Amino acid sequence: MWDVFTFELLSWKAAAVILSLFWLSKCVHIVGQQTLIVVETLGKFAGILEPGLNLIVFPFQRPVGKLTLKIKEIKTRVEVKTADNMFVALPVNLMVQVSVDRASEAWYKLSNPEQQISSWILNAIRGIAAGMTLEDLFKDRDHLVGQVEKDLSAKLADFGYILSAVLVDQPTVSDDVQASFNRVVTAKREREAAEQEAEAMRIKTVRQAEAEADAQRARAKGLADSRKLLADGLRVSLAEFEKCSVSSSEALAVLLETNRIDAMRDVSKHGNLILMGMGGETSTAPLLGLTARNGLLRGAGTAGAAAKE
Image 1 (cartoon, rainbow, N blue to C red):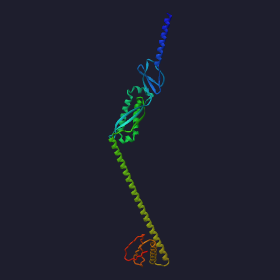
Image 2: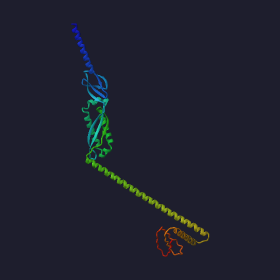
Image 3: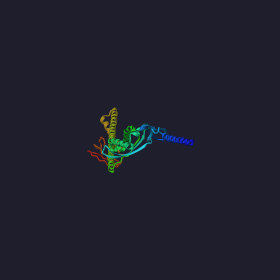
Image 4: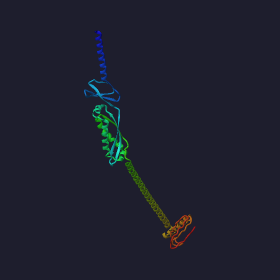
């Protein structure tokens, strides 16, 4: 009798131990790194189990879902119409992550997070691209990315997600549109090149005109200075003659004759030369001395004398 009672007692103890171990195994939860577990109490949200050792009250509490804290990549392809009526396909990659502080919203508010986030991307990019041209999409994708981040960050935060990055790849267009776009760009570059060439020619013409004007002013100034020096020299010479009681007409004749002789001496230094004197051989009128190295000069006059060296 005692042996039967002892056996039954041991059996109940063994069953209690087994039940206790089973219950304890249901109460103890070890959560891995970068993982969150959603727990409900009698069907109501109770809390989040974070990485490490956690305890719950079984069977009143139970885990209902698992969330990963790893960054998830959501790929989508958005068909948009630009401001210049071009249809473009934009490959978009979104990097999202569950927020630890709002993990319950990430679990309960979205039934299909990837599909719903893709829909938000589509709407956001279509609205932004509608105000951009095809050229803007190619060269200013940073503006598009910035606007998408601005529009989606707050919306995703309300649903327990953090927007880590937005990657917009190069727009894809049809071959016809791409060829047309290339022709437009080529025509624009050719027009700019023509404008630059015309501007360079205009600047060159203006610079040549300015240089010619400067040269004309320099020549005019040199001629004026030369005439002034000549006048000053004649005035000084006439004053010296007057001091010696020589009349002005006689002094002028002497000066002119001296100039004629000097001119003949200077031109004799060159090659073939013809001099035409105006007013006869004995005239004291000034000579026209024109030189041309290894050349020939002819002049007209009422009378003249020719000298050849």
